[in-house]
Amino acid sequence: MPLSEDLRNELASIAPEADCDRLAELSGLFHVAGSVHLRGRGEIALHLDLASSAVARRGFALLRAFDVDSEIRTYQQHAFGLATRFQLHVEGTKHAYEVLHRAGVLDAAHRPLERPPQRVLARRCCRGAYLRGALLGAGSLSGPRDPHLEIRTAEPEGARFVADVAAKEGAELKVLQRRGHAVAYAKGIDPIADVLAAAGAGDTVIALEESSVVSAIRADANRLANADHANLVRTSRAARVQIDAVRTLDLDALPDDLRELAQLRLRLPTASTAELARRTQLTKASAYRRLRRLVELADA
Image (cartoon, rainbow, N blue to C red):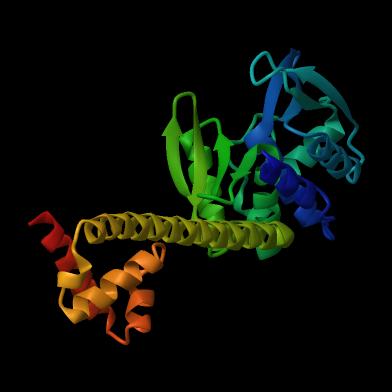
């Protein structure tokens, strides 16, 4: 999915300026792509399962900004052509727990939260950062024809929460439950552009809109070319019927008005009715009626 990769690369290149944005982006990443593993004696480990190295590096950098150590690992999926996936592992240290609690990923007892508390998304910049993290962690974008954006979550509640965050930024995401997961999604250029703009992906919005315009122009050109071809076929078939009809008639016995047009049709076998009309100083309708009369006389 080239558009998905372009989107992830653009979002991963955005450098948050404030800690609140870094925490909100981490929150979005962990809530859509994170998992918690029990290690015993009350200890846990966390990891992110990600689609690209750029996103893995971004998660690594966000954690490093808070002095949290992590490790990037890779594995191959059994499906989808053995695609390479990236995992970001975070050891359950006291400091890591504190940072992830600030990000609204864990509660004070180190239990995973289904959604971050309001304090994490109190500002507009934080809501945009959360959407950015969700798109980085589980977003996909297809197009330009019939563009479709979706963010995958494990449960419908997670998808509805992402949609609620987007709604506060004036963007609309719908929620759909599928077998084994749910998605918050948008279809069409304008709804998708609203979501991407809120997350800061302005370049992808422009590229998507440009591709959509080019696709629409190409489709219009194809329709016009097909229409022109169909018109040529119809004109050619009509001319062939008229020529065959004229050849069966005695031109000297025809009235002057029909004889002139019959002779012109024989001299210009590929001419359209409009062109024959111009050469005989007739209207197109009059030329058409006389040609039709010649065919009727031949069939009589």
